[in-house]
Length: 214
Length: 257
Image (tube, rainbow over all chains, first blue to last red; front, top):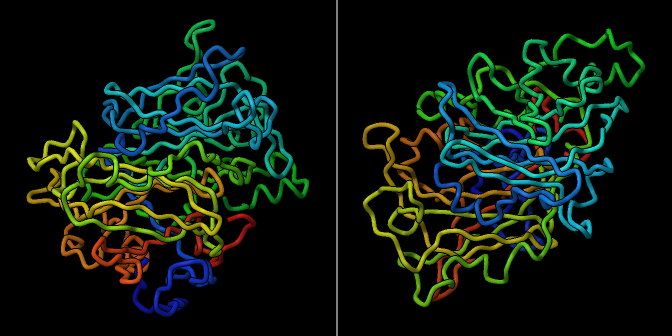
C-alpha cells in the first residue's frame, strides 16, 4: 500500500511499520473507512492461479439428489469465452450457509469452475433450501454465481433459479423486480429428465444475463 | 449490499404493490473500474451493457466460504522452493494484511497468487511471448492469513511483458492476487503493481481505475525493514475488501460491510 497523495480524509500513518501494531493502509475514505483495493481483470492466464483449487464437485456426484449444472459463457458476438472462471455460493438443503457440503460438514457450499476451450463450465451440487431475505420475505431456491474473465475488470454477479420451482419463482421478490422480459435469463433450463440443468451466461446482447451489483 | 428503499418499505409492512417495477440500478463500488473501458479492447464484447441491479440484503451477502488448513501446504507461499535450483531473477517477498474497510483484520482467509517469471513469461500455453520459461519457477502459490490478517509470499519479481491490445503495448510488472473476504460478495481479484513503473501511463488496465488514491492502493511499497540482508527485497501490500468505504451517501454503512 502506497500512501496516496494528500486528499481530504486521508490519514497517512507514519513510517510503515508492518506487523500487528501497524496501522492499516494509508488511504481512507471520507467516512473514515479504508478504501477497498480496486478490482482488476483476472486476465488470460487465470488457470495458473485458479485451477489448483478448482472445485466443480460441490458434493460428490454420487450424492442422492445431486444436481449437475452446466452452461456456456458467451460474449456479445455469441462467441464462447474460454478464459472465464465461475464461483458458486449457496446454502445447503438445510437452508444454512454455515454448514458444509462435505460428509463431515467441513466443506463450504462453494464451487469453482474454469471454462474450457468451448466456454463451458460445470458444477455438481444440491438444490438449496429457500432462504428468506433479511426482511423475512421468502425467496425461491437459487445459487449465487460470480463470473470472472479476461476483459472483465471486475466480476459480474448473477443468480441461478430452478425451473421446477415455478410457483416459488413466481413469488420471488428479486425475480419480481427484474423486468419481465429479462427474468428468464436467471432461470436454468432442464436438459432432460434426470439430465441436469443448463444455465448459459450471456455477457452482452439481446438476451444479456441479468447481473447484480456486488 | 445496500439497504434500499423498497426493502425498508417491505419490512415496514408496505404492500407488495408498493414495490417498484425494477430494482434501482446503482453501483456502490465507485472506486472499481467500470466494465466498459474502450482502451482495453477485451472489454468491448464482454462488458455487460445493461445496468446492474441491486439486490435487497440477503444472507448470501454476509456469508462466504472459509478454507481450512488442509487447503494450503506449508511451503505453498514460497514460489522459489519447489525445484532443485533457484528461479532466475530478483528474489523478493511481499507481505501485508488483509483488512476490511473498517480496518479489521480478516483472519484465516485464502489468498492465491500467480504471475509471470522474471523474463515476463507465464507458464501457460496461451502465452506466446518469446521470452524464456524458467524450469525452476511455476509462478503460483497460496496462503491463509493468520489471526491478525497477515500474509506473506516469497517469489521473484515478474518482468513486464508485451500484449496485443494496441501497438507496442506492454503490461507493467504485476502479481495477480485472488482474495476471499468475510462474505462472498467481498470476493476480490486484483493485480499488485510496483512503485513508479513507467508503464503505468500506457496501461489501460491500470488506468481503468481513475481515482489517484485507488490507483495507489494497487501499488506495493518497498520496505527496507522487510528486506532480508543478502537474501531478498521486501515489499508491503495491504489488501482491503468488503465493499465501499465511500459511496453516494459518503458513508460506510451497514453491519458487516
